[in-house]
Image 1: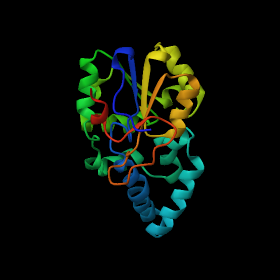
Image 2: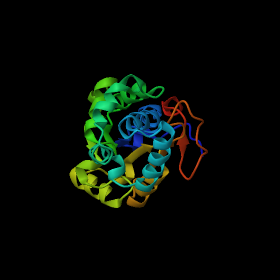
Image 3: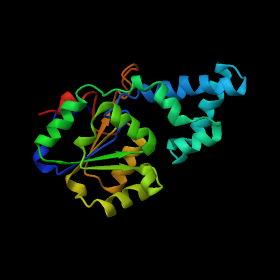
Image 4: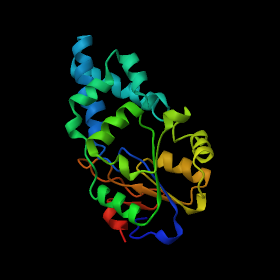
Length: 220
């Protein structure tokens, strides 16, 4: 269901995904589906389309694992400097609509704000530097810190051990239903799905969780 408000009085902690939630997922989609195949074709002497077809199948096979999110893994597997390639197209990194306003709103509400991302820290650091939003977070957590992606219960267990919070008074926003389902199993009390992670793609259909397209819908 679409939602238009949240009970901010009864929330203490806000857990925020990065890619597709605060940031436009177009950067990542372009990078992995266009830029990496192009650069890989240059060193393998294959066509760009052949490389894209192979890589998309390889990505799918790894989906949901920690390696799928690991830049070191893909650098080794493809013999490419993935971080350097990200710098080549860094101008495509951008915030989603009202993301900065939403972060300022949370500060004004005196909420504990924790960035929880599956992104590798090397890539995350590039994006945070580009967008200038680091100062909005009380804590920054990458699933690589815990050797477990957000899709696994181990991530949430280790997050709770390191950063104590009340599950019933915690809000988690993410664009990935599998991740939201994992958080739900762990007992995070309030879950919201972002329906349009890539601003150049149509919105997803509303799934199993309360959902918004843009942060303006819950800025109240």
